Each structure stands twice: as structure tokens, then as C-alpha cells.
Figure 1 (cartoon, one colour):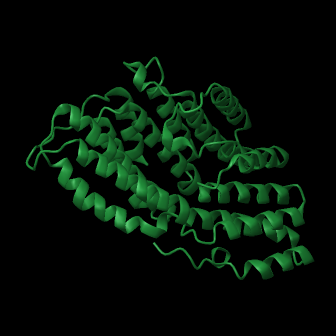
Figure 2 (cartoon, one colour; figure 1 turned 60 degrees about the horizontal axis):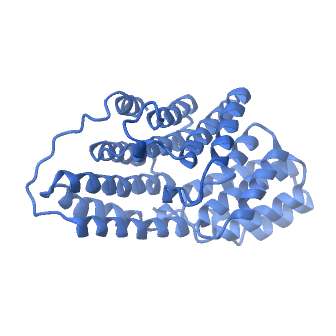
Length: 338
């Protein structure tokens, strides 16, 4: 985490100090950049549908071979900005997939590498998004909640109209809402209801300002589910149910893993309200939804529900659920190959 804190601070105070580059390879042009972007989009679709454990190794091989060759190539300053930005996006995806596969140390290294590439490409919005992703990782898997809140705050501060030199580097309302939501999740895990409420209110306010199609495109998955997580973690089961239900109602099926997360939050919230039968029905829907996902993050949600399920003891509802869930690989933990 010390490296992460240094990276976020360096980004805030010295964004323009990119490392020098060499130009030892062939001439790089627009077609090369489009190939990287198309390849990254392909792996992103696989990640959304099958989890980070599915094709992570193939993406890493692409980064080590094809992308590395391009970065060592010969290109103009204008091309460089686009090349380093798409390289940062590809590396960020490798970080997410490693995180999703439970390879947390590797994910941290990819996050920092992606941040450096975004800075070299002078892509402030992408750099802020990377800090936000680091915040997500710190909250949900590393247990570093204060650091997570600081990372999300740094992302927001570094993309505000005060901090950025041009309008194009100012975060859209949707992106700012995400930064506030990630900060809220960290505060919720800390049990700081006041700070969490303030961040959630700001997230809602920004989200209501969004305009259709304003982007960025990679935020298409972002919705009410994040606030459902916050309310679940604060013990506000009714609010968590509301937000999770809204999220599922707006889902289009494209982001399978996100739908799984929202459904598991709904199951947790039902259990917290004492609605065991509804909770088990929701959990079964989630397990079936995520049956083909190879994801340590999904497994963590299952483990959290498993712990909550103990409240039902050996009741009929719990017995019936366990009998049906035993047939599903995600409940058994059989599908976590990396």
C-alpha cells in the first residue's frame, strides 16, 4: 500500500513528469493503436462474461509481446499520447482481471504500471479511473479502508475543474459519481456512517447530472449497485434491498458479473431483514447467473452469504438451499482456475 499511496500523491502533484522513452522499433501509427484497442475490448467482453480467471493469461501474454513491442517503437508525440492511453487501458484490464482472479499482489503491480502509462499519455481521466479501481481493490480485498477512501478522493480531486488544465480532462458527472461512490464504500466498511452518507449524497447528486452518452464508455456498468453495497455494510438492509433491486431492474445482461454482485447484495439484504426464503431464492438466482464465472471476487460474495446463512441454522429453508446450491460449481468453489 505504501507504493500505492506514493503513486497517487505523485499523480496529484506532478502529473506532467513522464519518464523518457526510447524509439528503437518500427514506425507506429493509428492502425497499431486500433489493434490494441480492439484486442482490449475483446478481452473486456470475456472478462465481463466469464470472469478474470478465464483469459487473463492470454491478455498478459499480449501485453508482454505485442504491446511491449509497440511501446518500444518509433512514433510522433501525437501518436504517443494515444498509444500510452490504450496501453494503460489494456494494463488496467490486466489489473482488474488479476484482482478478479484473486492474484492481489500482481493486480497491485499492474495498477501502478497502468497509472504510469496513463500519466505518460497525459490522460488524466484514465489516471483518475485507475486510482478509483485501486480504491475498489483496497476496500473489497485488501481491507485497507482508509487508504481506499484517500485513493478515491485523490481520483476526484485530480479530475476536478480546479485541478485540470483543460475541459477535456475534467471528469464527467458519471465519473465523479463513481469516485464518490468508491469513497462511500470505503467509509461504509470503516463503519463511518456520517462520512459514507455525505459521499453517497454527493454520488447521487452527480449521477443525477449525467447526460446520456457522455461517457466514458467503460462506466456503462455503473449504477445503483454501489450504493446497495454501502447500505448493506452499514446494516441498512431495507435501503440495500431498494438499491440492489433498482440496479437489477436497469440491467441489460451485458455485465454478467455485475448482475451477480447486485443479486448477492440483494440476498444478503434479505437475510439481514429476516427474510430467509427470499434471501435463498435470490442467492440461487445469483449462483445460476454466475455459474460460468471464474472469479475470486464472486467467490468472496458467496462466502459472505454463506456466513450469513448460518443464522438460519438447520431450518428447512437453509437445508433446501444448501441441497440445491451443492449442484452449482460456484457454491462448491470448483471454478476458480486462474
